[in-house]
Image (cartoon, rainbow, N blue to C red; front, side, top):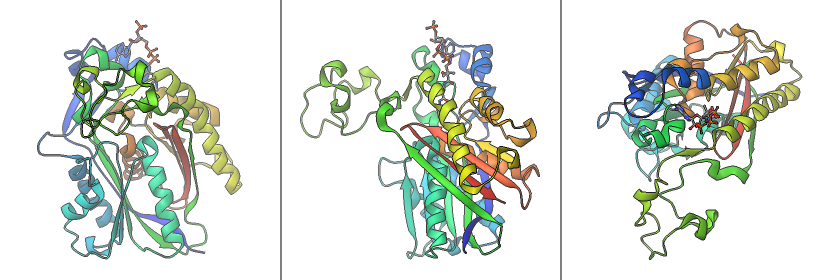
Length: 351
Ligand code: COA
């Protein structure tokens, strides 16, 4: 039976460090509040005009490709996960292809929009393509440049302090080794609370999902629905989040979807050598750890340094854990995510 394995992994975080103290100059917040509620001490911001979601993804991809021992031209499919793309369209997949200098046109590039679960959704898609023998070298990238569109004021502080920029990438290849590779992936969604962790404009909604009266959406002409007259005034082009609702759902869905993967494979939580949760909030990770009864050395957290980098958070953390020698051949690695949508998912990998 063919399985998919992670053959190479890379990460890139921009140089510029933004501390909690730096943010206190822009909004009413404090290092103490941020650390106590989220565990975050600092995050990175990309260099504006020089770095983009695609360029950061490309840096991470180059490392993953080199570590996989292949050439760029060997990549036969690209999957790019982000909620902060360079352009509204086309997506970052083709921009990354161009940036990498892959000139062959036999390949495909797929963009996915699953926010914090983007990497796990991408991993699951790649896994299906590899298992069915369609592709041999899939490049999966998660990259975010949140700093481009956060609300740097007291009004936006609950969201702004959480997010950071960065990228991670993996190359997936087939393996026929008995006990190696992706053992299982599980994907879920529930659109009930779509607007509770969202950036709703620009878009085609025209006020529809929110109820026109409540939202005060202007009666505009075609062509003005996307960028409508009071878009700037009502700030709907900034991400908004009902933090407590997200927290409540996350602490329920994370353990649920991890247990689903364990049950499917007949494994126990104690079999996990390394859990790499999406870095949403250190308190959420600690809750999952407690719920599964895992030791500190069985969980990788780096939100303290990078904040929440959404689709990039799992590959950055996974890469860091691997670089630190904490993931070795034969180890059972568990990935899990929850986020906007809501969408959530898990994966179990025998490294
Ligand atoms: N600095 C200082 N005060 C802040 C603040 C900030 N950055 N952000 C919010 N506050 C204030 C609020 O205005 C509120 O003040 P009030 O009591 O005077 O009204 C108070 O802190 C409590 O706000 P609340 O939203 O209830 O805080 P919380 O304990 O729920 O913590 C989060 C907020 C965002 C840290 C928390 O809800 C969370 O982490 N949720 C999950 C978020 C997440 O994981 N998102 C990513 C999903 S992938």
